[in-house]
Amino acid sequence: MKIENTKAQMRKGVLEYCILSVLRDEDAYVAEILDTLKDAKLLVVEGTIYPLLTRLKNAGLLNYRWEESTSGPPRKYYGLTETGKIFLRELTVTWEELQTAVNIVTTQKKKNHE
Image (cartoon, rainbow, N blue to C red; front, top):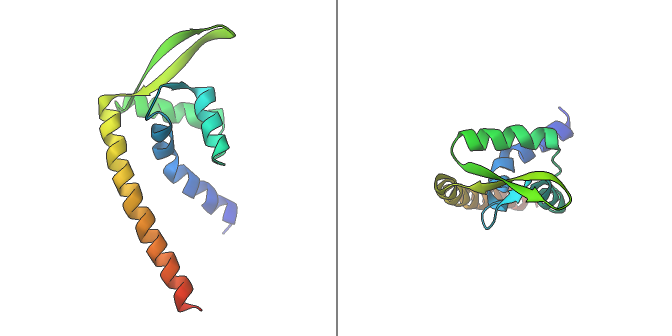
């Protein structure tokens, strides 16, 4: 079993939550979303993010609008729908519960082996 595969699966598991979180406060276009994820050390390529954004849009969690750009072609800005905001709030609760549970388990394991 290769560690890189496991790491990649862990990142994929939280990617939807992270994208929705990036869009929580304001709409953004793909380059901005990717930059935010990159700054957080979640390296994602365009080939991964576009299908995910489409899936989130088709699920009714995101919408988009085209906006003219002064430095090139129009940009597609993504934003949360009302359904997306509710979904994100529910994911946040689940994430916090999961984070607490994982911390408890991993801390207990360390203590048991000391």
